[in-house]
Length: 329
Image: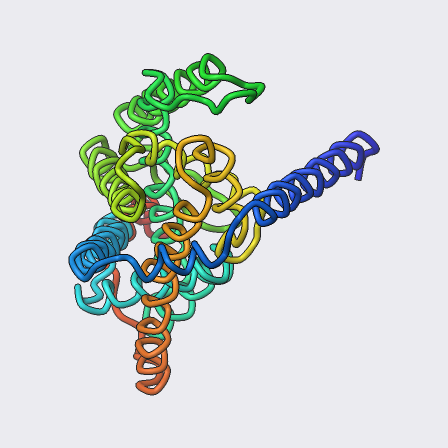
């Protein structure tokens, strides 16, 4: 490895641990100011109507997320049934949220799709499509919210609202670049570590943005239901987006502590700490832990049924067809 590369890796590692230290400091500072008996009282204060509405939004969000894999089925041209694809998506999503995207999202998809009869090529395309879909909506929503100054930076934050606005504009440019690539480059095939990928068509890119924007919006709606009405929904959505990228950078399972630290930093001046933490704990219970229990049962059923024989995937649209060689002699 070249000295320059080693230096950059060292800098990146230092920055990563500095980020974790900052998160830890924010958590400790916030924990000292929280009256935990008030948190418990806020948690027990949620009525059946609020919890029922939040639970319905959780189901809706997981259903929308399953749409990622259903759209990926069309992209990868495999023939697994809709119930099986939905089950794989739900299991992978629940494990991804709780134990990390690499093991949960990618690892469980590989295992469940391979047990369902798919080969490595189609599985890789499904994973790439689903991961890209998730972050495409993030970029679009974040771009709109930050560029329009719908999310105000908390007092004393160095970047400030203007800094967020510039970030939002850059995100909108990325969105436009992706749509342009899907329009102009979707016929090209790209090769990565022995796998073949094609840029989606423009209509499929629109589906990606629609599904992902809907899912991120539903997640924010759940938190918004559990928070006091003083916080506008666009602000909740914007803070969730910031927490999402912070959790991805931290590589901490379930983003434990990171989600809370970002929300405390951004909304601590608007919401009493006890109510804010109660909302986030309620969100974790409804969106992370309850679906994980269901996913564990579903996964055990998959394992009990054993591996299925390989299914056909049709002609591979990712690899250009070749004309037959002329006969020799």
